[in-house]
Image 1 (tube, rainbow, N blue to C red):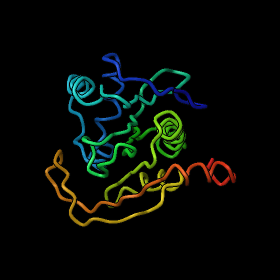
Image 2: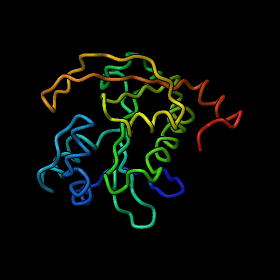
Image 3: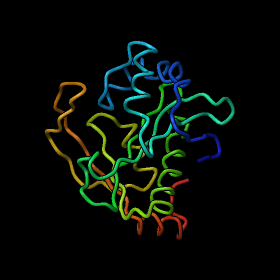
Image 4: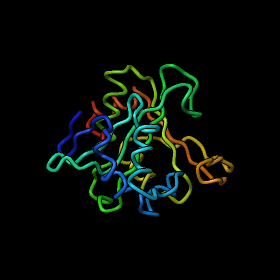
Length: 185
């Protein structure tokens, strides 16, 4: 998939160095619920064991091909936000040097198009941990509506319990936002 500035494609072994450059930053992974990467070898293991699943994409700069983040859709059985076959969960992160450029909302819009148009999803859920205002803003910019806050969310990779916030976007809301021109640009 492509956007104006990004190519969203499957993760490859050759992305390990790019992944490590972004994922080693302690401001990136821990706020999303996973520890900072300690080596290129660890990043390669994550590509092979975590990121190489259906509907998980490396967000790559179109002009350089460099992987700068990740975006995915998780379905029944791999998410705790839904048990329905026609709903999924959106997850994403982007390297700190690329924060504040509108790149993740751009990627999210394309993945939402895929979820609703290509995969026939009725609803896409998203969540963020308390304090992750950047993730909250991405969801707001892309039309997600707040649903609930949960005070005790297990964060197994960090061995913590946090407060989590959940939002969703239905296919009808998405289509309506597109139709009336209120979909965020």
